[in-house]
Image (cartoon, rainbow, N blue to C red):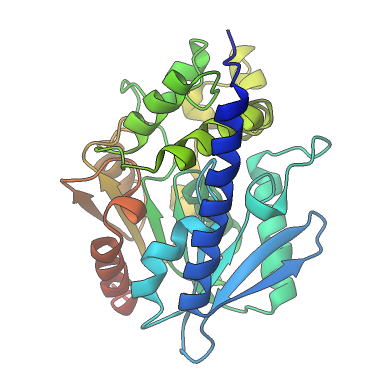
Length: 312
């Protein structure tokens, strides 16, 4: 049964929303982030941080996230790189359009048009979780544009015989379909090795937002994974995965994974490493699914080292 918040709960959640947006705005100003819009279609808001570095890194966020989820790691990356961070269609300030089809090919097309409009000829590319799947498919389609590819707990790859959120979804359990505070707490415990301590009003805002977004997120999740084809037996999970495109990704690849990732098993990393022509793996022993939030400085250091040495 869906949670019915009290008036007091909603009031505190509204205060939490104000606190979150103020926090992001303040952090953006400290980073020197300039906000821009890509009219598309579809519409996308994006942030640019820095303009004086020789190299640019495009950062693609994960499912249910927004561009500001990269602000923590940007503190360290901006010392060496210009940063371009879009809100993907369906998330953040880019908004959700129920008439769009949010499959992987469309995300790659949308990202391609965005990159072309802002005038980037070549760049480094990084993606986390869902953003990793989009980044990998983009790199396979536009190899001349991508100098290096960093994938952080990327979705889209499949390790046969190992349970993941894909198997859970096929069994009828979508971890992102939030109906109650308890569902939200479960999701947090699955994303982080140790769930962050949040002000009560912020947590209540995040709970209400997750409940309000659940139908849209379910649509995006199903279309990204092509659940209709998998459930009908037209394709298997492995056939629907990105395993088969790895050989087309010829630039240097770095796979970062948290040992305690319960959404996408870390053992996928060494398995997929063998499928890429040029790949390395780094496993973070202390993190879960989101190293960019749990250990931004450490991840940034490893990512910068990889990008500087991306000629291996």
